[in-house]
Image (cartoon, rainbow over all chains, first blue to last red; front, side, top):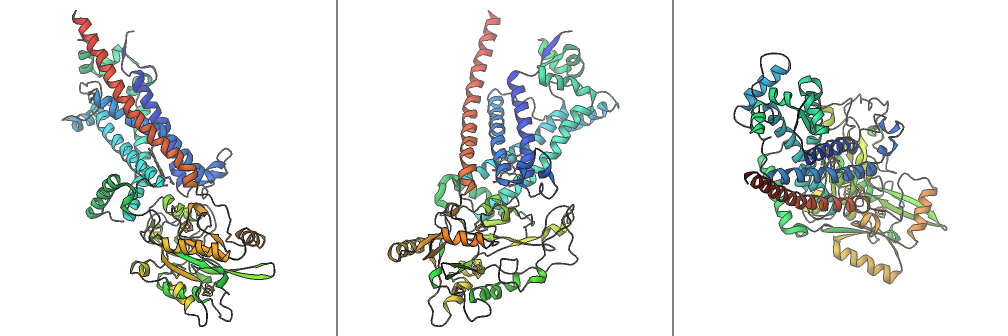
Length: 216
Length: 326
Ligand code: HEM
Ligand code: SF4
Ligand code: SF4
Ligand code: SF4
């Protein structure tokens, strides 16, 4: 069967470095809250290090090196290449419903470009959460360095936004992983996130607009 | 908590102002400092309660917690921290006692040490609170906001002296998931925030000086002057100093005729709840900040890398297109 290139190596590296570092950030971010000791997580073999806030936060810092680099790379690389295929378009909300209904077997999917309308909506959601975490996280790094001195209220508000958006990250992560794994129609995309390619048949069938452009 | 439009505006403008003006927006260390001259403290011999302790308890009485009972244990644990039946305890820090006087015996000499929050320059309790409940004020004091404190006691864990004290059964956690998250509200000395903002002295400072026939133990004033005074006394009177280097610097300077190594050891030998280790590393500065610099640097490098990669790949694309046309 013929294969069509969907994800470049750069895109795959971006995706997986944000995913892996994001999960580490989530785990260590929750560890920055006084929770793990209370719930005996620190007593699970191999998790003793989570008992010390300074160690957990240090791992949070280290993971944020990858996260921040990947997020900034993503914005600048695709922004400068004018690749805006993941930004929402008119009619995406209506069409998202159709896509989701089709995933559970009701009706037919509308013809799609490289990305499904539902993916474009989800991208904005995930993007806003990730961007907020990155910006407030960088501000936290800067205030710890005392390179910026925030007013007491500003420091408080920045902290609260980071913590609350951290919780939102749990929801967007579960939503994103859930939609990919739960619906068989999305599995070719998952494979492509590893290999870079989708079957021609799949592209023709599900991303007819993209397929047509690709053929020209 | 409500984040009003005004606060949001303050946030936005402070962030941009901070970027523009760097460290000049507000001095890092804060305005004031306190000198605690241990050579002058006799533990208030003859008084039933040391005057500094009494003054603090009186001045802050209306801010002490009044927990609702029964108090839920910290599920899945069976314990909770409740000091409400020990309000009269004055020989240690509790949510109802923010300063106390320690006693050690060194080489036959009694030394009394009034202990409270040190008000650190880069305070871990403030920087690490996940709810932004602790703030460092321009006056240099670190203050707990009892309306947003969740009572997780992280501030106590990250404070090198474990100063903040927890009372269960009060605070915002009761309104959210009282059984599963949060544990009360933390309390500690805030350097009499309302008084010092008005330019007055903290209550304990005034009370100590009011003791008849005695010089005050505390000298409260402009930070630079207090530091200068402390170092002068170190030089001229051969005293030892504590608090200027510990945890990266604080705004509480102890002076003593015996070395703090000895005091520290005596406290340790007595198995005191509150110690005075001589070497106190500020782990935000020593552990986090070097990595923080790498985070920022790699962000910048990534930006440059992405820009280069984008232009190079565009050029390639263009050339490829032109090749096709030929
Ligand atoms: C998936 C993304 C992330 C999640 C889920 C997350 C979550 C959290 C949570 C829940 C906390 C605890 C609240 C607190 O201690 O203030 C935290 C703390 C923190 N986060 Fe994140 N975070 C993420 C990304 C980032 C990024 C990208 C950075 C840096 C640029 C960052 C820097 C920090 C810092 C400096 C702290 C404070 C640690 C401390 O000093 O105690 N985080 N994070
Ligand atoms: S009031 Fe002064 S003399 Fe009395 S215990 Fe406190 S610091 Fe010492
Ligand atoms: S002594 Fe402890 S509670 Fe006080 S400012 Fe320093 S870290 Fe915070
Ligand atoms: S400065 Fe104020 S709050 Fe702190 S111990 Fe003295 S009286 Fe109490």
